[in-house]
Length: 156
Image (cartoon, rainbow, N blue to C red; front, side, top):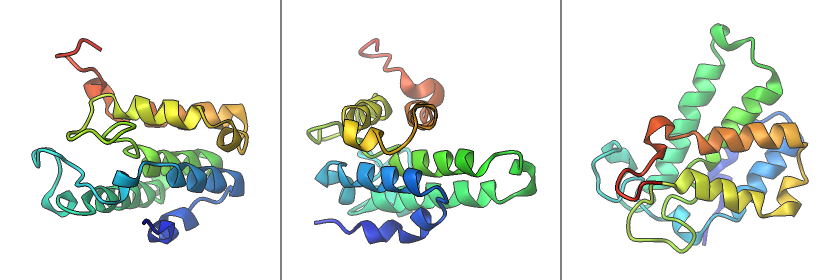
């Protein structure tokens, strides 16, 4: 079983209580494997600290920590508190469906899009935040792999 308190520090950085609750509920709906798998099924695309049992959680925490630290820099003061909260939430959720819905053996290329669809399908969770915030947050998750969001083998 999982313990969401592992993200207590990261969640404490989200100021908007609605975005925080949305993030908590979205993490709670993540597949069970999220709490135990490595961040990289091949071991090639993540640092050693993100490999092995619980590596995906360590990866999520470290990526979110880096994002929070960057957002604290003066050069990012132009972001509103809600925009910063959206970024932190998207970082926490970006790999929540890394192995798809049913937990495939390897990372699925379209995992950010699967995460978006799974979150969007839960109307109760989505009703916690307004549509503008929801759309920005889901866009942040969907675009997490940038130009690598395309599977050239499967042509999707």
